[in-house]
Image 1 (cartoon, one colour):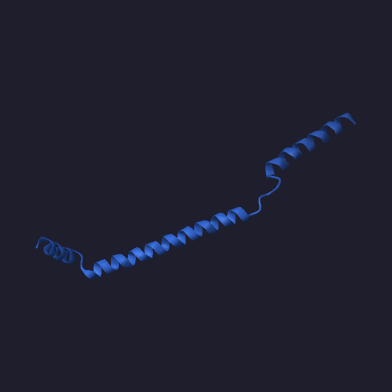
Image 2 (image 1 turned 90 degrees about the vertical axis):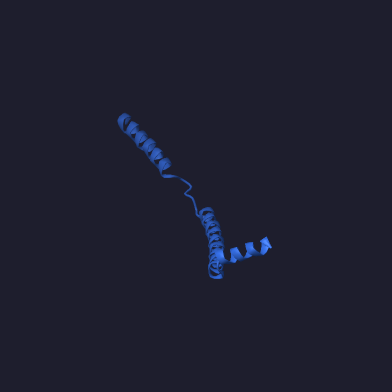
Amino acid sequence: MEESSLQKMESERYPSAVSEEVRTLTTKVRALEDEISELKKDIHAIDFLQKKPVISGDTIAVGGFWIVAALAVIGIFF
């Protein structure tokens, strides 16, 4: 007897329209979560496939400094 009254209270508490809306929103959230995970995978793939420079700007700056220093030394002694 108590079980039937409990079920009756549940249906009164959560009308079918609200539970249907909750189900719809839940499916939409799951679809968005799947889309987000696919986008994350795509971002990682793009990062992996991008070409990285072989020589960085810092390396060029240090090499340029040594070349200018060598030319200055050569210019002073010749």
